[in-house]
Amino acid sequence: MTKRCKLRLIRKEIFMKYYGTQLDEKAIDQTAAMMAAAIRTAPKSCGADTLETVVVDGEDKERLAEIMCVLAKETGMDFYSRDAENVRKAQCVVLAGAIASYMATPHCSYCGMKNCGEARANGVTCAFSGVNLGIALGSAVSIAAGCRVDNRIMFSVGKAAIRGNFFQRKITLAYGIPLSVSGKSIFYDRNMVSISKPIFVD
Image (cartoon, rainbow, N blue to C red; front, top):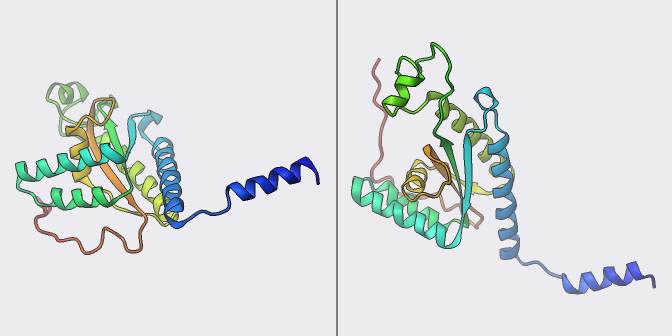
């Protein structure tokens, strides 16, 4: 028997079985990494790298859920605590945020200000930040869907991430995407206690 054949036999003996929960963890880790790559490579205004991605699990994920419960009490909006339970049940959470920046596009005014200088002076977020983040989030969840990993884009998670300083850079907009692999999606059967509705002005 050759040395290569012996090594193959040893490897088969050592790594003989992978059980469901172990494979679930591998699937989650690989999916989260690919989602981070999708956010990084998503098309952005001027090709500028203006987004930050963080993946949290374990104690950091629990701290995120606790902040969401605090926000529920402060705002009276129960969906924060509802979403916090999803965060607790999820294996990990992908956080994506728009770094504070301005595109300096002349005669834009999409943010409602005359120019970027006025927007910055008044603390107004650049309109391109939301566009860039939205495109990246769509790219990220398409990866999760393709991997058959249950997920939801959550405003509440992003708000808690900013409150808890989960990002390294100054972030103006953020969303979170809890990831879960289970027999039934943790995002079904959620009680819609309180939810905001759009106000149309036309």
